[in-house]
Image (cartoon, rainbow, N blue to C red; front, side, top):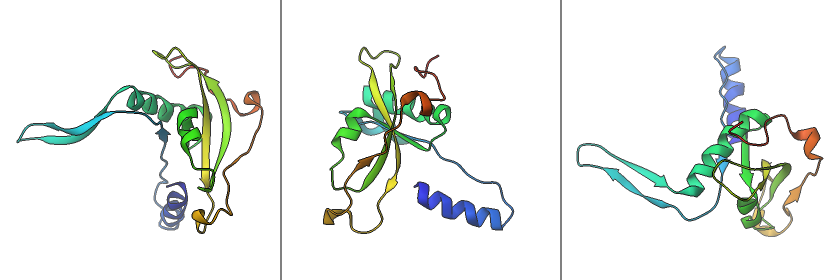
Length: 140
């Protein structure tokens, strides 16, 4: 999404239009999903703690100045040869969760065939204090 957004913003700049930005929070876990509503109005939705945490992670993107944040659960679920590049941001405690979670910026993905094993997942490590620009808790 970030790479596509860059291309779109280049075109918007060329046309003299305002630029767009997106923020994404990623979490992994069991959710209740399906159509919600009546015959007159229906929507597809997801409910559950993983959805709530993903929403809080999305809000943290602005505080940390990044486009995509995932937590430790999602980071650990990434296949090692998927070609994703991530950077550890911080250890946070979110409202209504008893355990702190490490959060990562999802920087991007190696171009080419990620299944060939040539693009292992790498984490660009840097101290939390130097990358942290937002609150430890998204509710502060």
